[in-house]
Length: 222
Ligand SMILES: Nc1ncnc2c1ncn2[C@@H]1O[C@H](COP(=O)(O)OP(=O)(O)OP(=O)(O)O)[C@@H](O)[C@H]1O
Ligand SMILES: [Mg+2]
Image 1 (tube, helix red, strand yellow):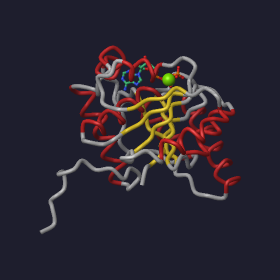
Image 2 (cartoon, protein in one colour):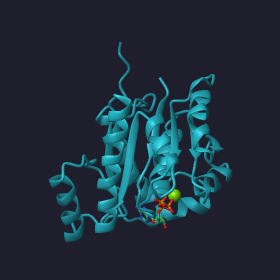
Image 3 (cartoon, helix red, strand yellow):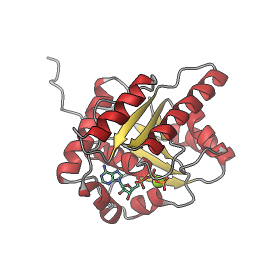
């Protein structure tokens, strides 16, 4: 089944496009068939995809009412996509609501600062209210971005999110230049950024939140 993963965060600049491109491109490297939808007028995701260094399909869609039909059409593609990712702009909008409604997994990036953490908490509440309205479960969790692990600020911010009951992925994207380089290379993250992003992908897969696993990564049954 094609998964739809939306990356949403009301606070701008928290790492939405970085998280999305890192995970989506690593899945492509692992052999997944991926489509990405950029709904942000800044078109940063599209600029990355347009370099055509990562083998995936992309669409730009700025009409919130057309998002669901676009997602539905992509879900019918043959051969099927393993995952469709939706990037959103860094503010609450009709589009972010539609992106939440269209998805079966929401990732909420947050850097280790109070403004991002507050945005992450508000975004999580927004996801919960959309899920309630739709009377269905929409798993959502925060992914810490651009962090220096083992620093007091990272600890304080993650403790605060945990205390407020905002679900959070254990693995984090560390502060690595390789994440910034993706913008110009159009490729998957390299070096230490790759290792860091792989830990995030593995954590999501380990929790059963991402269905696609690298073919051959698991022992074949006899
Ligand atoms: N793990 C990381 N290591 C280094 N830099 C990072 C990391 N994550 C994000 N950044 C940087 O933070 C900045 C904002 O990231 P990004 O553009 O992904 O955020 P965004 O939420 O998509 O922003 P917008 O709301 O404008 O769409 C970028 O310069 C990006 O390179
Ligand atoms: Mg962005």
